[in-house]
Length: 157
Image (tube, rainbow, N blue to C red; front, side, top):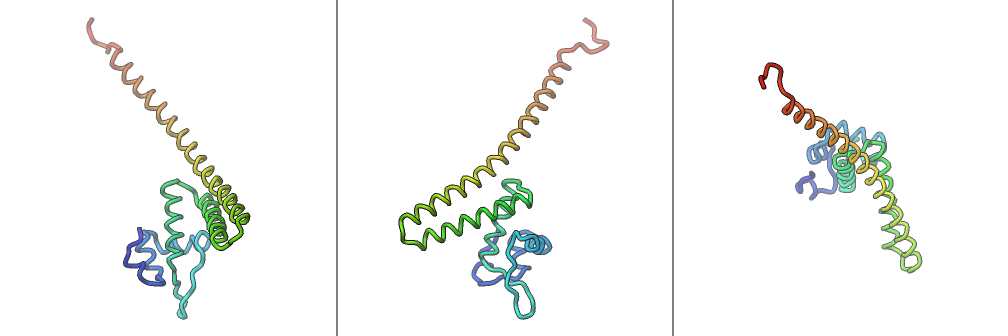
C-alpha cells in the first residue's frame, strides 16, 4: 500500500499520502473531519504534515473497510477500540508492578475480545448472505434439471 520511498522521511504531504495509499485527498480530508484520522500538524504555510502514525492509521482504516467491509461508523468504533488497546499496551510496557501488568493484560484481553465480537458479527452477516446465495443457486439448478426432464411441446414419444 504505502511504498518504502515515503517512509524514509519524517513527514508527508497529502499528495504523497494519497498517492501511497491509493486514496483521494478528499477522502483523507473527510476522514480527518469525521475523526477517523487525527488532524496532522501543519507547516508554517498551512500545509498538512502527516506522520508514520497517520499512515499506519490509514492502513488500519482501509483494512477494516476493504477486508471486513465495515461502514465508516463501524470503522470509527473499531479504531477507537484499537486505540484503547494500544494505550493499555503502552501502560503495560511502562509499569513494573506485576499486579498492574496483570490488570493491563486482562483489559487488553477484554478489548481484543470486543474486536473479535465485531468481526464475528460481520462474519455471521456474510454467512447468512452466503446461505441466501446458495439457496438461490439450488433453486436455479433445480429449475435447469426440471427443464431437462420435462418433455418439450412438439416432441413425439
